Amino acid sequence: MTTPEAAAPSRVRTVSRVLGLLHPQRYAVYSVLFSAFLGVVSMSVAPFVLGRGTDVIFDGVVGMQLPAGRSKEEAVAGLRAEGRDQFADMVSGMDVVPGLGIDFPALGRILVIVLALYLLSSGLIWVAAYGLNEIVQRVVRDMRSRVERKIHRLPLRYFDTHSRGDLLSRVTNDIDNVSAGMQESISQLVLAVLTLFGLVVMMLYISPMLAVVAILTVPASVVATVIIARRSRKHFAAQWETTGKLNGQIEEAFTGHELITAYGRTEEVQRRFTDTNESLYQASYRAQFVSGLVMPFVTFLGNIGYVVIAVLGGLRIASGTASLGEIQAMIQYSRQLVQPLAQIGAMVNLLQSASASAERVFAVLDEPEEEPEVAAPTMPWSRHGLVEFENVAFSYTPDRPLIENLSLRAEPGQMIAIVGPTGAGKTTLINLILRFYEVDAGRILVDGVDIRSMSRDELRSRIGIVLQDTWLFGGTIRENIAYGNPYATENQIMSAARMSYVDRFVRALPDGYDTVIDEENDGNLSAGERQLITIARAFVSKPSILILDEATSSVDTRTELLVQQATARLRDDRTSFVIAHRLSTIRNADRIVVMEDGRIVEQGTHEGLLEASGAYARLYDAQFKALVE
Image (tube, rainbow, N blue to C red; front, side, top):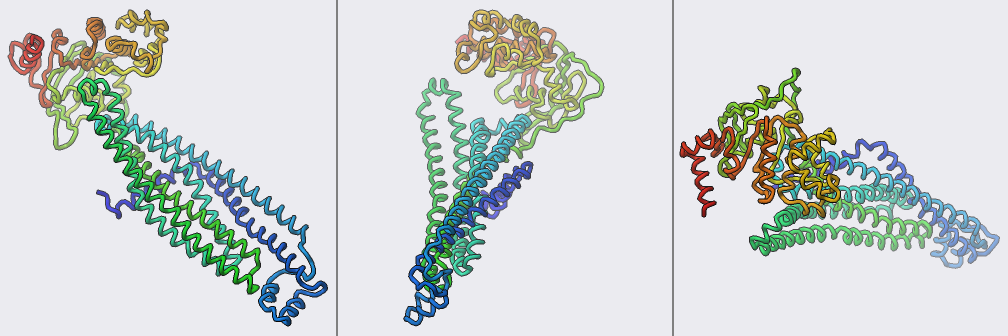
């Protein structure tokens, strides 16, 4: 469990990394800050100038109450002689001309200046906000690109230990939350801080004493914001973590809908969803409730300052130590002071939510990548398809070895069938050939070359794959076949389609090879037809090594024979590794390798292994009896 002491540096690092994303855009940021600064200056000066307009009106009204032809000093002396000392004190602090009314030309000039200041301020702040939002969008775009590139560099081990729903949540929801947080909070936070600074400067200029009264609310607001932010952050983190969990459950429910329905587990799935959904509700409610305390608390403190300034300001006007316009400006500033304080509090909470999401995104970016590539051999090497395992050892975790001291040799063109119970290491063996994982000890050679000494792209370009779960992407059938070789010509695509019997059913489709495979049309293809397309994809890649992972176990009976014939064609003159639980499909294998607990316990031909009456014979008898029964 993370302690508060450890979490604080983590928060600082996360926020620092988020802000560090702005570094490539620093010159644009400087321009935006300069525009925002000028806009805030204009906005901060406007109330002071408007106060001068109020003074012009009030001075004119008071001046009309005094005898004309006298100086201000004479008028004040006359008031004191009449015993009107309080009025005299107020007049002495005013710029009044006895007998003269309101100076409307001066008032008009002041109003024009105020209007110009507010227009200039609005324009500059809009430019700053627009510019900063554009910068943030570029930063988020780059973040998405970094995450997308990172995903392609992550080892298969990462995807084995993280649910797809959680990963999708990090790539979509969390990045969107970072985007919203940065877009709203950074622009508002910058403007709020600059506005707060401008207001404080103007208040200190007008009346240091009243400014101190208003500023005293700032530390209290900051302390309250920090305390609330600390408490809300853990709730935001729980909210986004639970969101990822919920997405994983939804993805699982959609993917396995038929199986869930067939086994009557709908209520259980719905109950799990309801529980997680309730947890998300509770986490979201707590996060919003705690973070929502900032605004009313800061507003309350600001109102206290506003009341004190209004009372003290009135006394200063009466004593002649301040003008009505100055106090009006101070009151306006004190009211405006609440807004940036509340915005800062709200934006800090929004940043807490964004930083919680950013941590999840950075966690992906910080994951160890596949081991770096090494320089490819300088001499060209052959493509015969000789594969050798020499004393290979591998484990997913150091304390649980899976494969130990495994040696195996597959001659060019041989069909090697790999069988064994679940967890025996069959799929792991294939993943090691593809360098989805790196061996812990020993080595794997292809045509005499250690696969670690060649690039992964070069290695995988020599290997064709036909998996049990047929994966077709959104696009035409032609594009799906060419996926195995993006440089394939039309003749090569058509040849692969004929060799894999894809041509038989595609020509019956209205759009032929231009038929688009998507959610709408995907259901028009049977499992066998989808399997044939993946076989055509392997044909067009022209591999020297072929991997068939239970290639017919999910195929419908109608097309199973075509699939078997197509795979037989595909295996011609290629070294093939076939993983199958249905032993009837591998009788003609050149060699059958039986694995148990990561070790090869038997190997030989189908007939030879049956005569040996070992592990393979037991597997075969079990399947035969199951079929008979």
